[in-house]
Image (tube, rainbow, N blue to C red; front, top):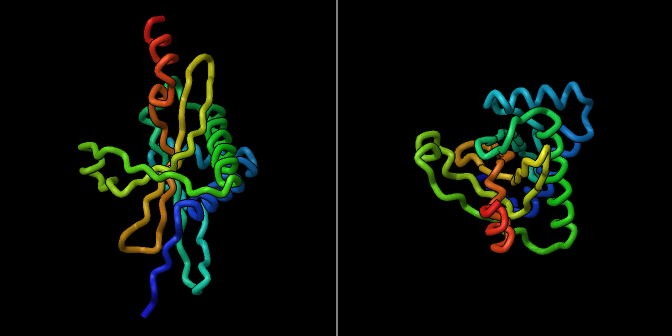
Length: 173
């Protein structure tokens, strides 16, 4: 009987940061743009098949939820977001403490598409393009039936990260 291997959030975040760095940030521009176009078209991209200590393999996929992106999402803005996220994940992981994991509030759309198993790692990459602030987080969704982990680049409302003083100043302007 094969025993299931459980990867902790920090382990998955480390794997994701490395895959995003190697597969997007360090990849040639043509490859990175192809991945962006696939994600932009709501398609899943397979990043790698990871060989586990027990000899099994786990497929690592990538998706994107840009529903909360402010402005016009283009390759440069997306790549900057990935860079900011990978940098934040790297900094947070280097400290060595457990990363917080959040379960987003279920929405009707998540209930319909089965996306209710998504967990968000508590590291946020922030960008500012032409005065448009965006925040991106890493989502994780292990497949309950198959050896697949889906990483999601999830744009979230950046206003939720403002301090109460900054939020009141931005709402009064």
